[in-house]
Length: 486
Image (cartoon, rainbow, N blue to C red; front, top):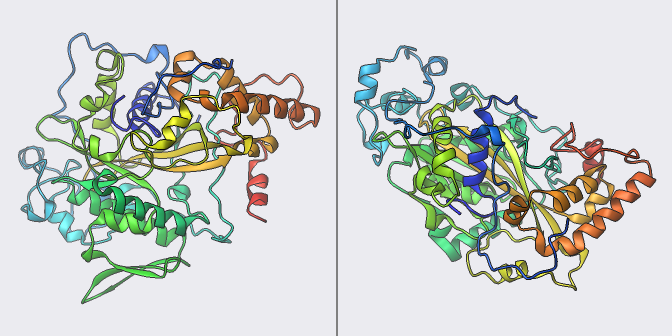
């Protein structure tokens, strides 16, 4: 199914993000039968295709992107770096682009990144520069009143109807890029254990990704320090350089002693994929990442692939989608990060499931003894953004699990999910692969739907549709706070 097929399916997710955005959307906005299903190692993507009208003809062949670059970052650079100017010599810039596999530390000062910033300027900025200004994306506010031992992620419910028409895209809420939960310590331990067992199947990097990895790591740590200053801080001294202090884990990390992705693995329970622009053709390639939440695929089988190769297995991709995808990646500005959620229903809480994992067998049949309490909603909350210095496009996500039984008190949610499961487009629902739990989930959703109408939580005759509060529901915040014990 292509790169990042499975849960989440980065290929499908980015594909639909692209075609929806290119249509100038505003920011934000029956049981399949009890048959035995054919075995499929790969978890299906969350959505299959964009709206019918989004398809773009490439009858004249795909364009070249060698001469197409992301918006330059020099207007923001002058606010941070003394003596920098907003002027960019186009001839020198195009002639001296950083080679695809080159380590920026070994390049001359007059070499440029795709965002028009020279390596000399990157080095002059030093470690942990003001990325908020460089990207024109503000740091988060301090999370006042945050209590880690109670914290659960916001209850994202990215459900919509009609299911095939909208992707519920929103501009990134900068306070919520990276969330902490009470499971933070155990999540970090699990991810480190996955790396110990699987090494390059969950974390790896290729030459040329050095600046991107450093930039990503520094931005993530700056976010943590700004959002949760009671737990995280950075210090600097002559001997060690920058040191990251993690009061939750009671650890200190000398930054220069570790690869940036390992710093993230040890401190940030989030998955990241780095897509680099190749100056030879202008297309983007998967060159580095830490991904511990893949179902049916892994980083090791996908690293190094271009977007075209990533999407080659997707039906009609080349004819109908390739142009839109490549154009979007070529023009994404640093100041416009986006967020969205994809979802599925799982037995228990599978996080990392490589091909052949025993958990896969649970998807092959409808177990008559399956307990309702074993069914969980899995939401992969996702962000797509460009980094300001390297120009790399970052896709990050976190897997969030919620017992299906929580839907009982969430207004409108049972009816909305039941509608999607029972009446969603067959091809899309087969990709989504909820069949193995539907024989238990749908009857429960029907009961809760009736119960909410009888209790007045939902008005009689409500026409099922995407909620204006999406990706939440009316009154969600009070429920969320109560579940945290407030």
